[in-house]
Length: 121
Image (tube, rainbow, N blue to C red; front, side):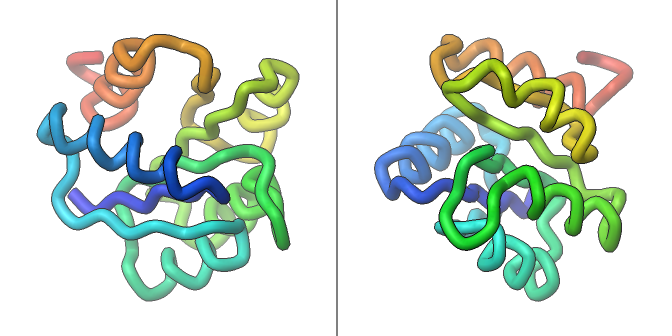
């Protein structure tokens, strides 16, 4: 599976990548630091899944989600944030799910299972 991880912190991107590898969910993984870069990479890379921080420089993850979903509606996007206020905004923007960065990793794993394989999630 092609995955794009979008976060302005390299440590967060590397942590997400490591989790996906442990869960055997990552095939090819690319990384972006902001929403504008994410859109460019979606066009080039066509990821099946995007894990995106809500608050990003240049273009927010919420705005990037709106634009990506308008052009590539089949792309699954999970918005992540430490701010729970972003949950409703993320879903309004078209995200397939929301995870608090403070949640245990199993919360993300369960959410991804439901998004990627709705019959078994």
